[in-house]
Length: 252
Image (cartoon, rainbow, N blue to C red; front, side, top):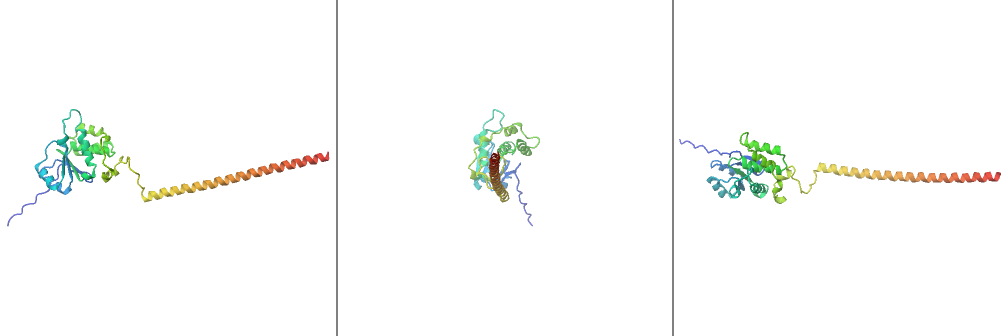
């Protein structure tokens, strides 16, 4: 009886993670890890390394019709300062990540830590995260020994104005849920319960306003009547005084 050959197990790339729905990150996949990518239904792969991709990965993107954007090769330049990446690489990567026309998108670098860590750290700052939270996510992937001070510094001082956002209808749904990402958006209607409460408060304010007007009208009417009675009282007193004076004169 012939023995059955065990089916090869699908291997997940190192440091693979879901960043947001439709956005993934990992280390550059090896030939044995490429089959896993088929399960993601990718439309775009962004490579942040100057190294050429593995042959198996090249065959995969050609066969699957996946767009392979090699930013590391196209825009890489040796850095003469503290920056771990060119601003142009970060800008190009983020603008594609924020455009649903590129989704599902996978971002890779040699280790899945440094270049991807910088790009997604900047994404978190762009989403309105504080630096401590962005740093915590970066170190969750780097571990206690592989984090770099220059990566963390770049994330801390990242300038969100560097990024040109795509049109509103091309932004992913998770962008609208991000804190600090509501600048320039049209205010949507509140939930039914909240809207009902607002309408109730508005009606209450209108009712109270009407009651206040009625109260003021009553007070004004009361003051007018009071003034009229006072004037009538003064007229009667004057007439009585004149009558008494006439009577006194007649007696004299």
